[in-house]
Length: 489
Image 1: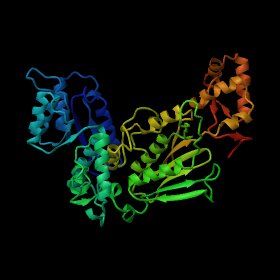
Image 2: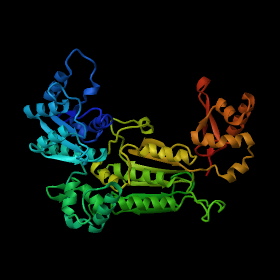
Image 3: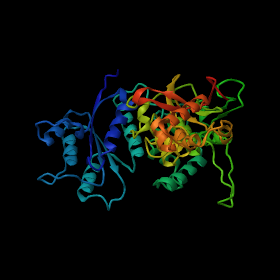
Image 4: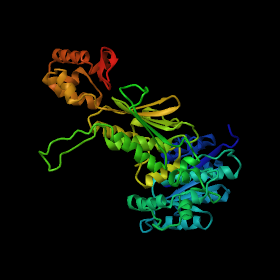
């Protein structure tokens, strides 16, 4: 454990940043690098009730902290009898006690900002450097860069994180101006990025925290490099199309994609979409015959981009995209942040990106969406397509996302000789991934004995399997077809 253990005080109007504050705390305590140095993050709303004046409590916590982290938004907040808000009291107290102060100004619409908050920002601007942010992704990236710089300045970092470290041997000449021009145009169109199309390379990298003493960082090379694999050979994406349901040679096809992270994401997505089924419908409702991929393209892209954005770039392993007859697996070298569990990925959860500076540029170009929403988006897309929910697991030093293909095609259903009730229940079973006897009765109108016979027949035909007992008894949909106890291909 490093000797440096920091206490960080987060200061802002609580109501304005009700969700952002705990999410930021989760990031500070969960990031692979920062969690080694951050001992505690203070949020006033997490304190238990006590017989003390509120202002005494939060000001004493300011005195105890090592770093004051202020988020100055549009609201000024509650004012005391002297017309001063807790946020300004906290800033003033941190200043008097000579604390390291990191201030981030939220938003750019000055007309919306409360007059007293404008004054507080002006006061802070005269005393220290502050950065402007417009969303949670930018805030995460800026806080990360600031803290890494602070830790490096006090000698706490023996080896800086991958994305903030200068890329050994690289210069600005190793960056692609064509890719930078594309980024500036795309980020401006998609997220209102403030820098103009002809912004110089150095100015862009400075704005994105992608320079280390004037040299491009590893993140800069992975985002905008002409040939990133010259410096980071394993930083590529390997795509494998397998025969059947097992990872076994000979493969149907194998492609290794290099280039920058945008190129890898595009090429890997196209690899998968080029090999999965895309049945074409009729022209009954349109001049153009409708066509839909068997896996939602956006879910495929989300799984791939997340792996590329959040992988451990210090690992010698590559991102791997494995397409089987029954599923798509996306392997990301690395692990979940310490503050998240696999179960958390199904619900709202904070974003704790392994490479915040890479993630920020992917967000600005809309390759990734709202922070922390990627796994939920994949679940939602698969449900809408009538597919089982994706699986998330940690195995063999990797985080793996599995999207299940639809093996239960119209041809297979016809061969199974199902009755009308069973056919009516299938969409519900597939979407929910499970069903109980009571639910089957509700969906089909069957009596309990009839429902029991129908469900037992579906078990025999390999569509579902019984799980649990008593009140927890239900039937699980087979994500891969079971035939005589073995996997069908």
